[in-house]
Structures are given as C-alpha cells and as structure tokens.
Amino acid sequence: MFDFLKKQLVETIEWLEQPGQLAWRVPFHDQEIMNGAQLTVREGQIAAFVNEGQLADYFGPGLHRLDTANLPLLTDLMHWDKGFRSPFKSDVVFFSLKEQVGHKWGTAQPITVRDAEFGAIRLRAFGSYSFRIAEIDPFLRRLLGTLGGLTTAELEPQLRSTIQTAIATALGGSGVAFLDLAANQQALSDRIKAEVDKAFAVWGLGCATFFVESVSLPEDVQAHLDKGSSMRVIGDLARYTQFQSAEAIEAAAHQDGGLAALGAGVASAAALGNAMTQGLAPAAAPAPAAPEADPFEQIERLHKLLTIGALTQAEFDAKKAELLARVK
Image (cartoon, rainbow, N blue to C red; front, side, top):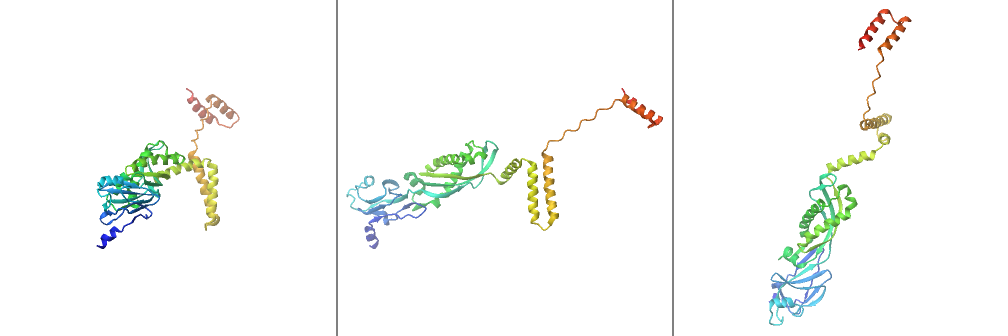
C-alpha cells in the first residue's frame, strides 16, 4: 500500500546530472507516470519518452505539465480512451547535450603511413578532443539501449579506437611530409576531425573540437634524424672545433685532473675536429710525377763531372752505359 501511495504522489521529474553523465533513465516504480506530473528539464538537457523501446515525445529546457495536450505522439501510441486520467507506463530518459570537454586521445601503437619524403614510416600522435550528443535516436538505439545510464568513462575506450582508425586514414591520405606536419598542424587537425565526425555520427555523437598536439617518430628513427640535423647545423668545421675546445675547457674546469685534464680535453677536441675535417674533405689528388730527364743531357752533365775530377772513369762509364740502355 505504501509503495502504491508513493507512486501516486510523484509530482516532479528532474535530473541533477553529474560531470561525465551522458544519459539517465528515470527509475519509476512500475514505470507508471501520473497525469499532471511536472517535468523539469534544465539547460543543456533534453527529456525523451520511450514507449516499448520506441521514441515518442521530446521536451526541451523548461517546466512541463504532463497531459494528453503535451504528449500528442505518446497519447496516439497508447490509444488512451480515458483522457489520460489514469497512470501510463513509459520510460523517461534524460540526455545531456552539453559538450564533453578535456578528453585525451593517443595512438597506443605507432601507425604505419607512407610519407612523401621518407617513404613508409611509423608515427605516433597525441592530442585532445571534445564531443556531445548530436542525435538522440541513434544514441539510444546503439549505445544506451536498456541501460539505466551511460557515462563518458564507459564510452571513451570505443571512441579512442575510432579516433585511431580515423588518424590512420587522415595521415595516410594527407600527402604532407612528416617534416612539414608542424607547419600544417591545424590543417591536419581539421582533416582528422572530419574523419572522426563520420565515425561518431553512427552513434549519434558529434566531434565538437579536435586538436593534434604532437606527432613523433619512433625513437630509433628520430635518433638518426637528429644526427642528420646535427651535421647540417655544424656546417663550419673550424667553428665546430672551437666549440668542442670550449666545451672541453668547461668540462675540465669541473674535474679533479687540473691542467692535465684541461690539456687532454683540448687535445681531444682538436683531434676530433681534425679527424672530421679530414673525413669530410675531398681526397687530395696525387701529385703529378716529375718529367724524366733526357739521357743524353744527363751524360753531358756526367762528362763535365768527369772533367773536373768529381767522377772516376769507371764511374762515368758505368753510369753512361746505364743511361744508354734506357734509350730505345
């Protein structure tokens, strides 16, 4: 008897939603609603009457009195013949239309895409997004169903998986080289948001905002890219040697080796600079061989040496025979 009387005394139906709540089904006893009950719908909410799984009437923000005049679709579905003077059974479901902000997304595993400059590479990306309920009917049928309610925490794993698929589609077809992504980050965010919107629409959701905050390569690939950047930044090897020497001096100043450590550090920096200079400089061309002297001119010079006594006759004859043997 007490439950029956309590059911008859229901005068106001309302929902004080908590952060993260998307939908809430009002837990009526026996699901019976009395004629003349008051329905309070706050800003950012919509209340829907569901009859045997079928959406009937909607109520936006405001205070509403429930009677046949205000529930024409539900009245027609129920075929009331008593002018809605008796209780009727129906679900009342509140939906939050507010934008759900501050949600993070990220690629759990690197996504392989074809880069315009590097070819096939694996990328990881991170960012944030927000969403809201855009259409009640698909949200009710595909997500809420007969549940008593639904929160963003329960929905997020599915949304993140959808975002990861959309990112692969957007990055693969962007045609923008990885090194140019930073300059085109807003365009990339818009491209991915368009793909996410398509996927979210199946559940009656809309992606309100989408931001790409970081796109990175795997650590080993990034290390090689950093090395190449360092070599390009070095440029002038002479200045690099000076820089290394200064670094060695500063490091030695904090060590216990004193002047010996200082000298060793400077020598190491200089040796490194010289090695890099030699390694990067083009190989020196071999010196051209000196032209061979004419044998007869050499014999004439030798004869002069014989005349002044600088050579003996035997030495002159031996050298002369050697030179003549070269003449062909």
